[in-house]
Image 1 (spheres, rainbow, N blue to C red):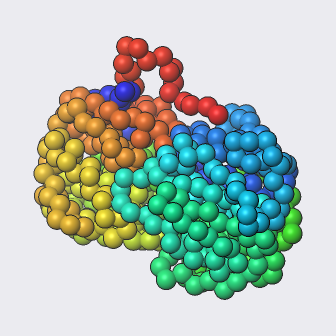
Image 2: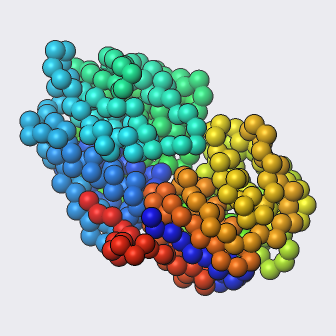
Image 3: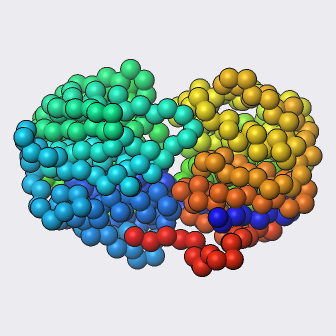
Length: 448
């Protein structure tokens, strides 16, 4: 298994262009299914989850091609997943087997569920196993199914998966009981080509929702209100090919800001949006960091001892992001004074605490709250990543630790970071990949 080696206590300096957003790219890739033509996506991150989405697109007949960080998707023809039979709009008829998404890809990635709205909008049918790829807590799809049913979809569930069919999607009025990013995205995808008007209320406000709507508008969709929590979608019979640039990844941006806090130094993250980082920057400023918005991005530096931020609570956007909870634990560990982290989104997201404690963090977890005593002198250890953001947290901890840290489980980190070693090395970190002797993967990037 590939590992990452970090020699800590080396300050970070320099500037770095941040990769395109994983959480924006995945629903936009699903949206290309709605377009019987060519979609050109610039600044698309070459990460493992994007490669899996590309494999799902290919499985239903799309042609996918990379040109650097531009991804070209031709969805002119959609076929039955894994087969050759062309599928036409409105194919979802009772008495026939629905288009089945390949289980080997669906089971690896939670985001595959957003193909439901797109495939129903294009073909009127889909069958998929319950999505996997997540070990940080339960992510039920009941809100997704509720929304689809409000748009006229018939759904059937078994122990293994779900089948959904509709002859013609029709507009509806959906109010979500809680804000759900995935259910909001699925509803937008289904409603974009539905008959009539759809109103979505109490929707998620994440920037990735805005990016999906921007992409669909560039393809001819009529969507308004995504930044207010009340979205109106006037369905269109057909969308057209378009060109779109994926925005900067706000979680990768936050990870590298926290890396600078752990190691010290001064970095400029090109393309970073201060508005999207307000919750994180507020915490960092309480810790004694300084950050300023510049036309080209965010400049951040830490040249003195970090202070405890006190209590931090994860919340839906625009609150403190759950995806930056684990890296923040690593930084809290070295700050002067005790801190607390309460996790309100996922019930199993403190798994990284055990590995951080092996490095001397001293974190105590009770239910959904972690107590961090602070002032820890972290030391290098051999630790293992078990999920994406926890893996990034171990890299951040390694930057602050005395001696050498080896982080195994690199494949989890690759799901969301295009090349975390390349990026941190560009900022001056003493970091590199380590491979087993029989590994010949080269730079570790997978391809479609």
